[in-house]
Image (cartoon, rainbow, N blue to C red; front, side, top):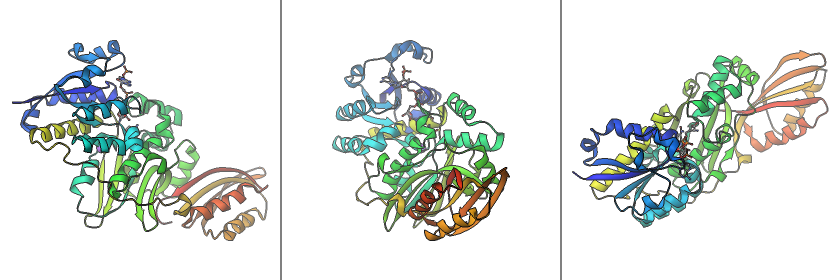
Length: 429
Ligand SMILES: NC(=O)C1=CN([C@@H]2O[C@H](COP(=O)(O)OP(=O)(O)OC[C@H]3O[C@@H](n4cnc5c(N)ncnc54)[C@H](OP(=O)(O)O)[C@@H]3O)[C@@H](O)[C@H]2O)C=CC1
Ligand SMILES: N[C@@H](CC=O)C(=O)O
Ligand code: NA
């Protein structure tokens, strides 16, 4: 029986998981894919640190060339992260006729076309199931199982770290920083957790999902992005009093005005299935014209869940080799759909502010909204201290531009002392 030799680039959280899963599956793999797999080389920067993780540390190396120029290695598994040198290594590997498996959403969301083109040119596999929603199968279902649909919406919770933080803040009253430190310790957070908490990681996943779902290239820069750093325990408490939870949602829709792609913290009804997605779990909704609604749920981050997706891709790449069909499923972006501008997107808004506690203030605020065609669904005074009152306004669904125009005027009013938070609302009020 053939033995397929592979190289692993990176032995951090995901790389270590891949090593463990391959080891655990060693006996089963030949039965599943018709070939044995041998991990021949592992690339790291610091071999001493990594040597404790392997049964045979002699396979560790720091020279990419020794992998690239090894004709026996036919699959390169990139789990180092970052743009360079990962981009160059993947392009080198593809041009050397090797198949590539990667978990690198940063790279795919910004250089996806270049990598896909190289894979097509060399008829190689470039597989990246782990890049979106970790262990949840979503790339392959979109490209294969749901290929008979016109997909009009893909949305959900695609970042484990922020979902973990919001869950801990809402359910255990944990402080933001404490919850972030725990997420980092558990291996959910990116090397630089700013990417998680500022919504960048989720935006990269939305770009990849939208490109595949709508067959039109969407890049990281195309996704309107806000993170969760401004969400406070007070916002979460008020949302809960209103029967809602706050979640960082990634939304991609194909509309008559173009593709809408955004990542924002949003209030969702506590009865919505996404509200029950807790901790590092992710969930992705897909709406297709034939299948209707589907939901994919599971662990979106962490060592073994992410390794599950990476190893699934390795096995697929081996299968394609064994059956002589490498490069079977490549880039599916065959359309060019424009992007919808954020100012044209409509939703309802939650606005919390501190105002002067005297007559006429609320009427003036309501007047500004009225002048901009923003209809108020609810207005609640949450409390008062001396001459200050805390006001929460919930609007009806309105265009972003009208809301932002109102907000610009309201925040400049002398009676409005502070805009404490502005959070979008998902669904009907
Ligand atoms: N963690 C998770 O839950 C998930 C991560 N991902 C993605 O998987 C990838 C890896 O993430 P993760 O395992 O968490 O990252 P880690 O930071 O834990 O590990 C990175 C590994 O890559 C090695 N590495 C980094 N740069 C180089 C380089 N230039 N040359 C050689 N080795 C290098 C590091 O080696 P050394 O320690 O010696 O520097 C380390 O072993 C990223 O793209 C990430 O976005 C995707 C889904 C989930
Ligand atoms: N940092 C990411 C890991 C997987 O992509 C997350 O928290 O979801
Ligand atoms: Na996945």
